[in-house]
Length: 139
Image (tube, rainbow, N blue to C red):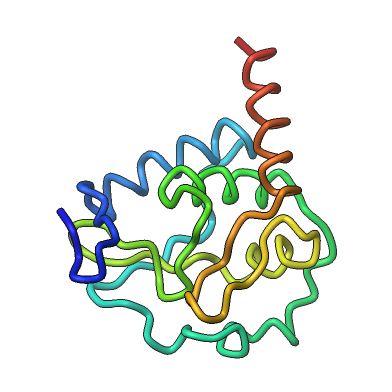
């Protein structure tokens, strides 16, 4: 399934994606995701970094929760997280604002304002590598 822009629409519902996301969170953070906001249309009020209200975000460091969300967002987006939401076959899921703030402050993601995306940085990819290595030790 392709959108007019050529971007892929994930062939999974928001509800089924939530099951996957919750299982990632259980594995990394020990509990289900605390945030999962979805709607039928893109979050058009979140097109710029200013729209994300990060000046009020006091997230100071990463936690197992931010690790889990980073892993899940990357699974669904390949490392380019749309500000207006991750598109599934029946709607969009908005990334969590607190997690986005923590990842921005730790340089795990950056902002591409022209593409209206958050993108994993080299540090973000390094963190995912470290997490996957931890998975290997668990099994």
